[in-house]
Length: 172
Image (cartoon, rainbow, N blue to C red; front, side, top):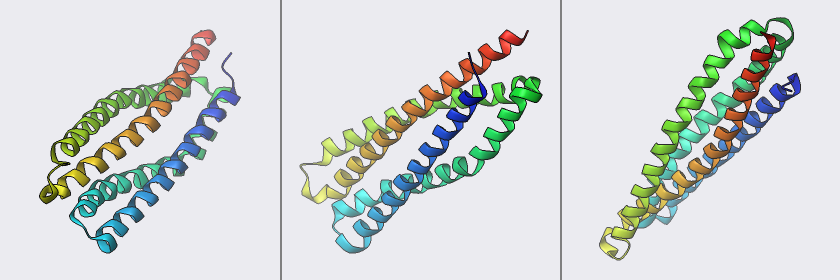
């Protein structure tokens, strides 16, 4: 049976994971700055670019999700008791969009992981092309981290959506 506690559990987990994304983003940005400004080798400069770009994405997305989680949780817990129709009209379509986006994210992250690994393995033995080897390795690392985190989030979102839909079906 899907309950208010399930709604709270979903948004608490989403908030925790978004905090993890913030930490990963900040760490990646700091590493990128260290690699680019202090270590300064071509390999480190190549490594810095994906860490900076993806780190900024993780930080931005993590902050955005973290900021809205409490309001989403309160709105949906309230709707559970007072206005279940709001869950059907607003939350189910929102979650369907979230779940559809996870499919896009998954294939994008797999493509970036493969591209990064391919770039790294192609250029790893060419010392004059060490920039590209560093870029490829960092791209693969960031894509793997994103893929792992999104795998967990996708599974949680699917379970939440299924539970919510089951609850609404029982009200009919």
